[in-house]
Image 1 (cartoon, rainbow over the protein chains, first blue to last red):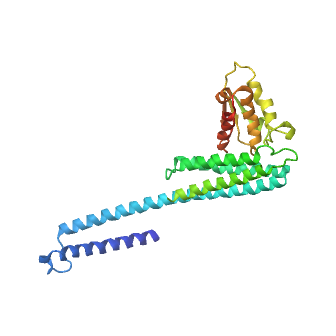
Image 2: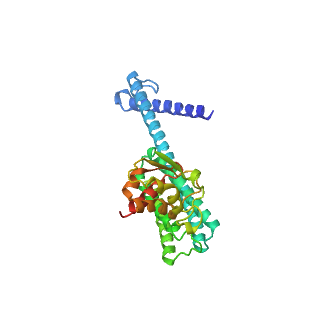
Image 3: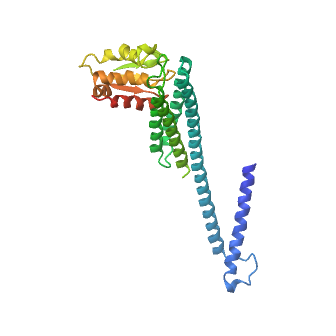
Length: 193
Length: 105
């Protein structure tokens, strides 16, 4: 129903524009000003109708393409939001483990790392479908920063009985997390450039 | 060519680096499932490691299992003979390859 209404509105606008165009064509010729309102030449009708139809199709095609492209970027951005949430929950679990290492938290950390890894795999699979910006480069930067963040958290002394993280190890984890977030934001900004 | 599925043949909950750190460590995995394929220097068959199906991997496990193997038998031979499969977490393949490449030998 809505689609039919839309078509009718477009058709009405087209007819209006056609009549307006034809009258303008008549009024622009001084020797034809005296003619009545609906007295047109066939060549004028054809010329303006063709121009209007081509114009409508071109603008329809362009708007369709633009909205499709924007939707793709939006989906990509949503995926980056998911990655960010997974990274934040990994950081929370990691922070808790560093403060009070125990086997239950250790499992939580490993599971949260896997969650990040899974969404990163989805991001990678989009490489072929999303050719905007320089995504391959930014995606590689995110993956490589994630591996470094993971190493800062789960390399030794992770999993060792009575593990204790030195101040420099703690700082390295916080710093890597920050750099990983930076990469995610860089990628987000690049999408809408 | 042989295939080692970590989740099926070792554990769905791989642990930390050393055996002293607890069960299913990287060291234990390397000794039990990997080293036997590298003992004969003339062996050149491909070994496929399936990484899917576990609850996840700590860096210490991966580094000790694969980095440790490269330290013991040489990174060139390890990189040549090992193939990794992970549909769940493709970044694991980059991670492991990186640990083997970082080995100085």
